[in-house]
Length: 160
Image 1 (cartoon, rainbow, N blue to C red):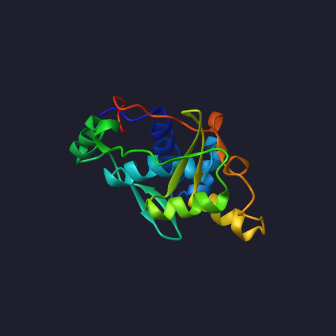
Image 2 (image 1 turned 45 degrees about the vertical axis):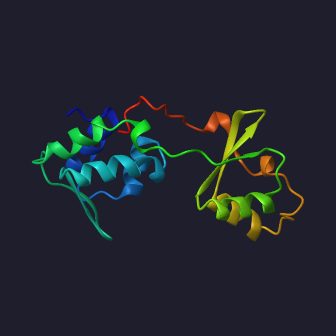
């Protein structure tokens, strides 16, 4: 199984300066900690790195169980994806929150004339509600993450 370029770079950084925190890795790679989460999860799952609380990541050596990684790389997005729950861009934040809970999802996808224009997560709703915004009047389009900042996967893409 071939690791991504970023995963190889993470391994190199950890080997050179272990233990290394996720903050340090993010700074050295020029990305956010959230962007590294999936890579670090895979590297720890397959046994290359070990995550030690309040210490950081340490290098354990090459993976002994590469079958896990091989199996993950064979899974297609279409095998694990669910139907999207969508609302119109003009829907109020309040109505969108109700819709989110009624459909038991964590993210709503926002569409305009059947075209994806954005997404809103539970965290986005929470920030808006705490911020004192009148959620009964503000349209969801005001708080959504817009399309250029959303990465789309297709059913025939690898989930890895």
